[in-house]
Length: 318
Image 1 (tube, helix red, strand yellow):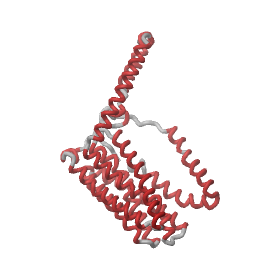
Image 2: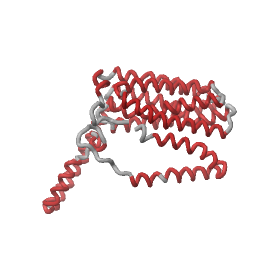
Image 3: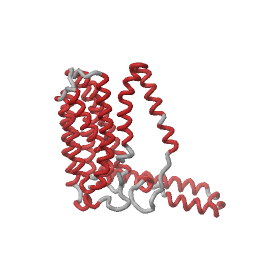
Image 4: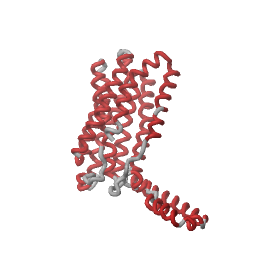
């Protein structure tokens, strides 16, 4: 996921100064139209995407995940049988409809069990809380870093440089930390905890370094640690759960909720106090708490699971 997701950091590096230029030329309305066109271009790449060949062995990958087990092999068998037994498949429409109903019911039951497994796992609940607290600070930092920099007296041109620094370090952090996790998989939770502590501290301390150099250092540290954090999400989920499809979906939903509450809270405190300091300190402290919760995930798991997961060939690769 480190290499696959590194494009977002590179996009931030390229688009940060470009958006400011477009806004100066076309205004806010024209900027939104431009962004819409850029995002819409991703449809082309989605259309040409092809799924890679899947291994017959390995667990919890793609369509083999428990939550989305659509009996693919049985469907292939039925298609093969249909070539020689066309008349049998054509006969009994009522039986076919009943079969579809039963299959849909089985899928719903499987999904229900998968969600129960997620929310009945103590380690998973701790991880979700950690994700939530961390992303309160992360999304607030993404939303208000440039506005706060302007309040510090940094020019609009230099604020775009801050975002570009954040994007480059984000891209590098994903790739480099992904490689580190491949080498030291058994220490994934410990390494991620260290990364999250630095990320949370960068958010908390950033308000006390108002110079451009100070904000540039903060942007680099925040971007690199955020990128590293994103590379670790799938790995840690794989340590906790055999099937990561539903757990990843729930994690992404947690990110989304935090993306609404974090910036909203910081914005409200700014409107109330006229300063970003209370908001950044609040989400920074909560992010530190979120980082401190991550080691509890390891303590709540069997020791053998933390050290043996993903050693097989079918494990998740970064």
